[in-house]
Length: 343
Image (cartoon, one colour):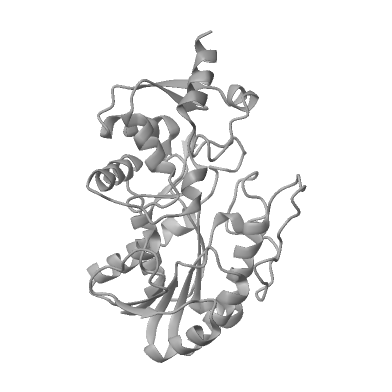
């Protein structure tokens, strides 16, 4: 197989490139060369997906059996559209990594691939769907952008050549968002550790390497299609996740569980202040059975935790990203809430 990875230098893109090399595939990566380094053995093509001339020139480096698009998270649909048009004659298949945010019901409703998608034109610019500062309703901006980007791929390539992958939370070595690293560092510091919700609450994060492997499987499969790419429901719990963080860090700390109601009363920001904690009914109710039937395999979450800690301990440095600062709770604030639990 000869593939082109759009991205290829950090987290998912790098994991895709590395896994493809390990299969003996020939890998090219199109990126700006500003974030991270592609694995040794990858042919890098420099360019910016928002620069029309760079995108137009990309196809001359082909042909490829498949394109795997891992770098569209911050692009407008029209940028994805321009790239797809440039590559349509130079590639066989197009694997587009989207997100569960593209569903109108996320995170309030359980999801399947037949759930309604948000509106978002294939040629929308980066401002499409942006909300006013005083808006107090659902923030669908990001989801509308990604739904439009999905349509950009499907508008250009025929449906049987496009695979749409919709992951939720992605964890593992190389993570740049900061969710799992924050919990690991917090566990390592010891003491009573605020644990959100209930220990048996199901969670569905997927390991970046398992998502990468599934993307490669779709690159060589025929027929295309859309897939929710999360760990199966029942695969892991919040309690198991947090205990794994304590275990792998050798921590002497212990978990102190706080109910959803107490955390809400204290204004704890869901999803970020205590990463992975969310009370919405559909947050961890994403049906990924279709992807499992197509070959998705998910390693135990404890293995993801252990491998991420090993990466951090051995000098792993995430690519700098503003989302890192969004995650985590200060020690002072945690202590204030813990005090309420023992009053």
